[in-house]
Image (cartoon, rainbow, N blue to C red):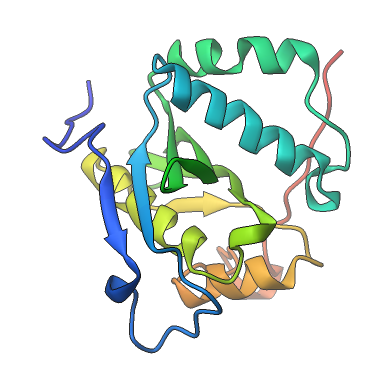
Length: 190
């Protein structure tokens, strides 16, 4: 069982004035609320599906909507997996961001790791540090779980996302520089 901090499930409100002063913010949300998703709460489950569907429809997400099956089962299936967690961002009552994470295990470190599986920020809120704030919450949760690292994959052409990830400390994965960076591969199963 993982240790849970006392604020789990409690939204953290972040005023625009709390953003880092060096951050070039085009138009900061008046009040951004970052919280760990509760898959049992209707508004969180709806936000999760709506935001992930928006991401799936985006060219960076494949350009196709989620299937009806995924829409109707996603929150329940994530709730059934203790290794999964999500972070949501709300601007007032409007859901504007989502990060889905799955805990894995590093055999070399013999500790958990957290894979950042999806990062979604609505187009209306990009460039406002929503992703950065959600990923800070992900990092806090990963540390609570005793994780040794965060991992993620990103498309080479998604330059804004790459800049964000590098700015907050992500880098290409190498074991031996002579062998180069690791590549992310997939194989679909029926």
